[in-house]
Image 1 (cartoon, rainbow, N blue to C red):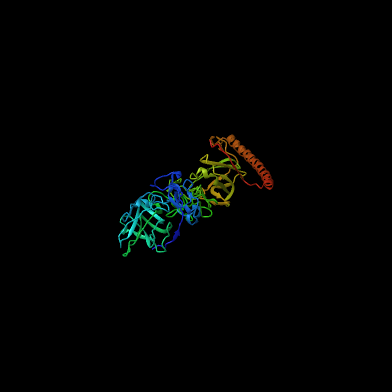
Image 2 (cartoon, rainbow, N blue to C red):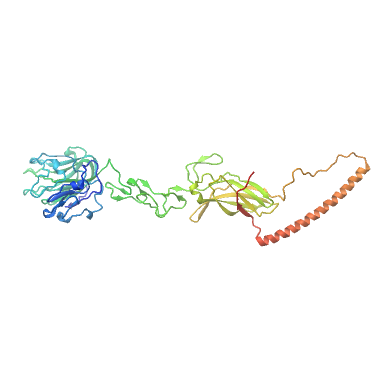
Length: 492
């Protein structure tokens, strides 16, 4: 049996309306001398001290018995559901002097001079006296408060009894959830017993005494509980009465949602927001979206599968175009899986190498969601040299950078100048043989051609030497480093 906790003359408060209860305006709650009901829907009775006037429109007596005038003394109890027994169907073991069972849930406690507002079960010697209330649906019960009469006639009417819960109107089938075996409750007093059980019917039972009739008078039977089939706990709360906060890492209605990737591993139990921001690579209002994490994506090979968290240019081969003898334009297709709202976290670098050297990264370029392709100019290269290029992609957050799969490597050899269209280097060999003048002319032409070729070779050598000296000086002044420019290039 659950441990029993006993509270004497305790006042309760409800912060919300309970389904199925008769609705009242506070100003219409019962009021008068000695007692009243108060609170939302007039669910909670109060007995006033020394016949003080009950101010039902304010929801309290001016002074309550045992100094419990304000419900705020216990702000964390009974917030959910309120008195679910109020105005519900009832029954009892017989009716004594017209005091039927409905009087035990009408919210009227009566005054010191009468017990006309109380339920009075009747029973024979040796038989149990009982009272029950039908909550109309299965409820989670928290506790039960029973109010004794002011007019006991010298009899101990409320002693050695139990509170029971079941799902049938047959009280003999109800299971005991609390038992009171303390001193008899005084006239006009009340007792509260904790009863953690679930059921539709809640009953009071006092076993029979074979020597005389065990009298029972119940002026009000208050059941604090929660209808299991009608409502959920508000966001951020859980438990039978929604008094417990959500466990760490959960939030929402009934704490049924899991927190995202918060930096401190916890979120608001109400709405799930992360007060300290998201962990690395996670974004969104609830920090549940990982950068570049769409369910599926299509690569250039039309492969379907889980989308990697990092950006990727896997399988992509950029295009190269020589702009002049020292500059090239490189164009690549950007990663299509990057969402526009998160483009600020992504970028690219163009890596290059001369000859067989190692690829080196240079300037960064942000992902541009306004276009599919991006083109940059790499200038200040060395003419007549072979270069290798590769585009690399990355994501960056909180000063942390992570590279994804780069593009394929592409090569190009720079030329001094483009050939002139239509130019040839052939010579004529179709003259008839045997004519000396033609032979002499041919020999003379060869000699002249050789001389001209030698002269041209000397001139080229001189020009190359001068160019080399000029480049050496330029390199000393400017380090001769290739320059990469982000620009829109006309590919036509």
